[in-house]
Length: 363
Image 1 (cartoon, rainbow, N blue to C red):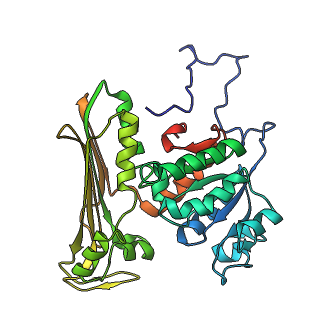
Image 2 (cartoon, rainbow, N blue to C red):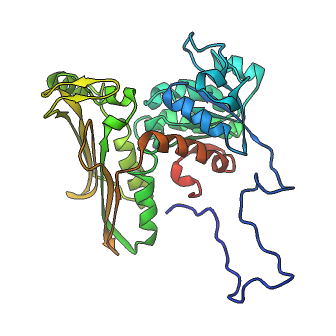
Image 3 (cartoon, one colour):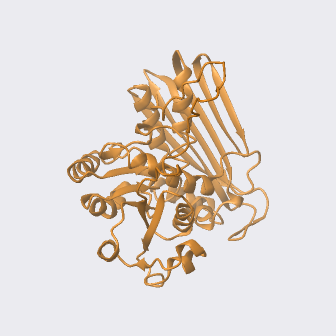
């Protein structure tokens, strides 16, 4: 389902003889005498994920960081290297707006790590795309933006087509574990009848904002009310479902989602929260897609403090049947940062437009 980054054709089994030239399959950015122009990078949103993203990007041979943007007046005007604690970013400034950044040093690509909802992200990303700047965003709903906001998605795609920009939503979840990886696994399937995905995350090891998002320390009744109002919980689970269905060319006739508070059965202390027994310590969220009454897709996500047996599991019912379990699970924060940064060299080579993560070459 996913286009491949390219194939390596083996030499004959005779090996490499004298006079033969060995082929170099390394990055064009790293080949002596073949260095490509560096990608000028900026970071929009300088929270924990944003700072780690720009720090990782600063160490890449293909990247030249030109600055950051954050609306927090405490951060505006500061040295990005001091803010991120990274010598490689010394001398790069934090600007209070996109306009100020572009006026000083227009980037080729911006990493956007600010909001979860596409409707909010649109107002931030559209001006970037209009200027011809590529954008890679951690916005969860941007994984499959036409699911909830088809008109805004079409509008952003038109802007990209006109300016030559590319916009991509990615991350670890959504963006990899519960969507891209299962789609990739179906590449060896003669037939796929159903796909089932489970993710259990020990949120005690995660950043403070995520622990807050899953309701840590709240009365269960309060958190359930927030869930019912759509003001809490994991964003992007339906987008993961929609992306898989899109790639498998399945037209789902029924989609159902449930979300429930996980209640602590013991006192829990983290670096950010003290949760008493009986208080909320996480969330259990599930979405199912059916075709003519039969469940074809199920995504089950449990994120809670002190979760036992964290793992990621994918089961594909088909020919052949496939099953994979990643013990411990894919580390969410570190993997999200890597997913954003690693997508950059591939995105700048993609056609202009609002892209899906499955549009890019794997790897």
